[in-house]
Length: 328
Image (cartoon, rainbow, N blue to C red; front, top):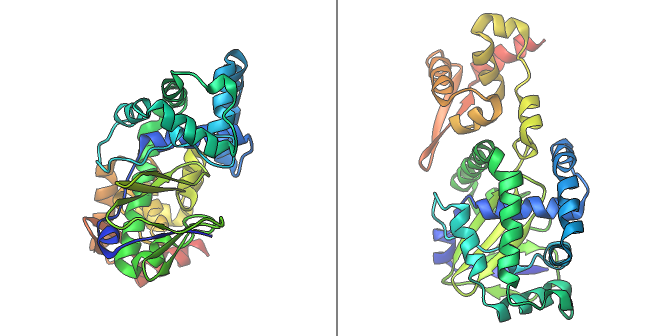
């Protein structure tokens, strides 16, 4: 299996962060794979696969680059750079680091990705620029139009994972984060099930990066930054359709008692969530969600607890009893 040896200082400074570049890469991975893991991905492929196939048919270099850098068994560094860790880092800033990759490094990375010689068609001086161009295409066509919605989903996942760290440590936060990934203890982070030599990343910055599509991989910029990209957990990861499903109307009697929006907030809080998560699920404005949770909390139907800089809300026993009674 592949695992990283993480020092106490590296773990203490590690963070969950959002990466626009990772979201663009995940979109290309799904297109290269061509199969859907859930309804949200089926909608995604239906919307974008024809344009992607047309792009590859028109440009043999892009087609070869996609096969070598994304469609192979290993995601090439050309398409995956670890984030800088800034909360407001833009796609433009991230893709600029792709353009700055030296040609020799890009060719060596592709050779690792394909497990052999780089195809002759890709031995060209503008290789990093071509990779950046494909990422730019993915961002502009597939990610940017829905980025506000995607970002809310990613923020909600980060808040939930951060709360897990506070309550149960990294072992709890990383449970189920991806196939083969888990905290082994004694400074060992298992990143996948591959039979790879361990890697000591003491002194580096470590980032955990959620994406909304079903993809997971690792990236590094040795020796400074390492990142593990993973799919968001639960229904939030499945895009607008899942969010709509999660926000189906609450029981009619509960809606009549509390109002439809407030009743739905109470139903959703069967597990702890932040107001950001509730916004992602319901589509309500943040101010409206805030007023609903304040009223429900004052009525004794919700409790709240702080996780780092975030506040999580959850149903109290009284809230559970009310929902159960109206659902019966």
